[in-house]
Length: 478
Image 1 (spheres, rainbow, N blue to C red):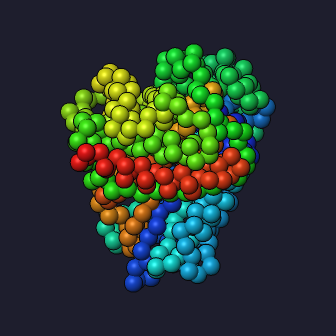
Image 2 (tube, rainbow, N blue to C red; image 1 turned 90 degrees about the horizontal axis):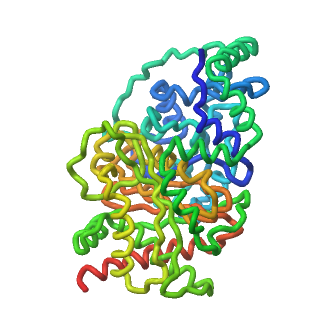
Image 3 (cartoon, rainbow, N blue to C red; image 1 turned 90 degrees about the vertical axis):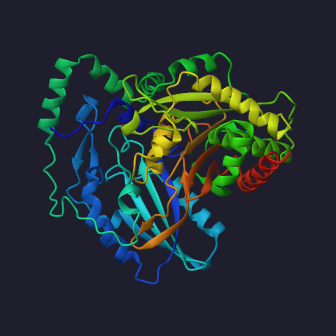
């Protein structure tokens, strides 16, 4: 019997439309090595390793009449060259052109008749660089044993050899319509209530889906409390269009750690305070009214341990987002960012106080614990965080901020050293901005995914993140 999609995974497929594609992405920039590094070389490496991620050769198959949730089946016509693609910028391509390409690629839905992922090798970048852009649907990342394609292609060694455990892969025959109906009938006998649920989900019963998602991913109590006081209205909650803009910002991890030590906070608190400072200046640049009491509500997905998980002794940096090895329960922390506060020190203290109230349960998974899980997990972890937000009402929050600690050592792909990496977190309905943050090899990378119509000035906001970092660093010696 093929694997059946979970209720949550199926919901993301049913609720996806042309304005809200539900894939998570990443942009990795590499220095081209002296040895060969081209499309054929990358394609060959991925082909040798794809057996490590069996789901990446499977597609979704619907059950007739929506009598049961869809199933995963091997793609009989799997074509690796369809999924691993080649693109190029006019030489010498600059970062703005790369970001425009990212925005265009992320605006397009994945083809539901094929395995739900794509990877692009982008050539033509200036300074002897190349980029890899990845897209993976959230239905593929189930939060239990999921592995992202990045964890397969990125290595700690420059020329590591990985043997494909399934080098002679042959697709298993897809189930027939009769088999699907028989299995659906069996499920209906064992769980009769699911037939009605599946039919409702297929017709996009949003309220039922929201309840299903929040129960599965946690944070229900927090969301219910927040619903009593809706998020402030403003430019971050405009109707979502079908096109995106993408911008980036960078900071030094040691600088943020210095701020953390000086103020007794966490790196995650510092990141949120930086985002709050940038949003404050962005609102002022737009002529919006900002008073001392003005706030914007951020949804901050945070990984929490299950009750039977081992206690983690080191809580130096409260980490955002889950991973199966340390507990895959996600709590939807809703934090009012004090954008009306002009003093960066007071802004950080207010954020720390708000986050501490959430973390006092002692269940938050520390950043160090997530980093020790191994592999290149950030793309997967950002996707799990986005799952928490995708079907919450837009009345509950203004902006999604996912912060995932990454490896602090260099990584390689087909012999090329990765210089930078930026997450691309999808927008929820009626959301204009999502901010993905990942640390890697001593730096912190901000990826801003924005609605093209609602935020033509997302590049201005990205520049203001850099200014907010400098402002926060200035508080260390103050």
